[in-house]
Length: 311
Ligand code: UDP
Ligand code: MG
Image (cartoon, rainbow, N blue to C red; front, side, top):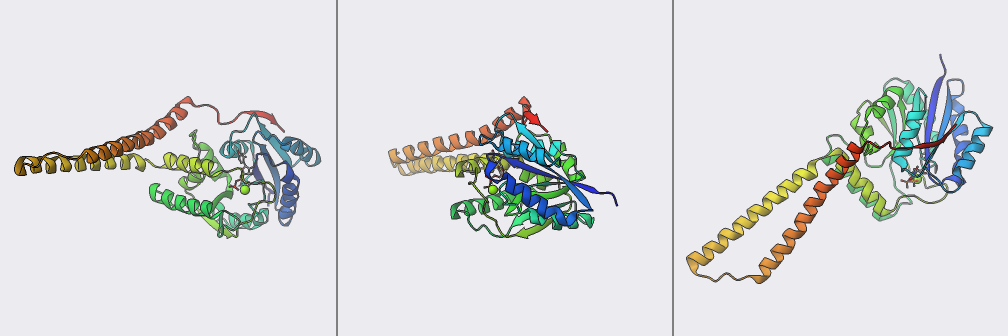
């Protein structure tokens, strides 16, 4: 049987401390597949400022299976992942984090499942969220529930970018040309036969997460705006309800004044209504603005990343 090539894509932003360990773990984890599959490790340096690139060059010098791409600045994980997917040439492709939170020991199992021919993609899903702040866990849970409701396809709670895909699936992902890339959504949107592998959360091997609560919020909004226009429908609905409420109030006041001669009072009511509707207008304009901003980014068609060095 011909040897299959597994491409491993690792986006790295300031991960110098852990790259050697990642390399050793990957080599050890893929030992059981020797004779059936070889691998290439694509380290994508996403504008790191901590010497990650030097470590990558060193690893490349030691082992020709290691490749690296260095982006001209920090473009974000999505862009780094895409750069890796576009550069690699494997028959099957794995995306994993540099901090060993995506255990490479799962790769042989993923490979077996893919080789069975029953699946096109084997994706990892965290069963637990130990070591994560309760606020972050709660926000993530709510987000996945909301996303599943808003988009037409289910999004699994605890899903990660960590997955092994056949070439067909990778090509499908690359055929999605949008600039605002929310990969977790794209992975689900393309469909194909996905096998979920549950595992317990692993804490970072070194350093700390690059995500603040604010960046997670922005990422979440990105996801919703990229995959659903329901917020726009909701905006219309809220606007319509507000109009009905205003009309009802108007009719009630007219009846009270004309039929019962009650004077029109209600300085407070006017003030409350005005501030409420002003706020509502800003909110709804903001929602529309989010979509307009996405359209703006899409029409500009800027490249999603620029490569400074490639080996
Ligand atoms: N990462 C990246 N660019 C960024 C932020 C993160 O390439 O701008 C990489 C990071 O080096 C890691 C992966 O994306 O390999 C996941 O990042 P992190 O561990 O901070 O996220 P978390 O696991 O907390 O979701
Ligand atoms: Mg991590």
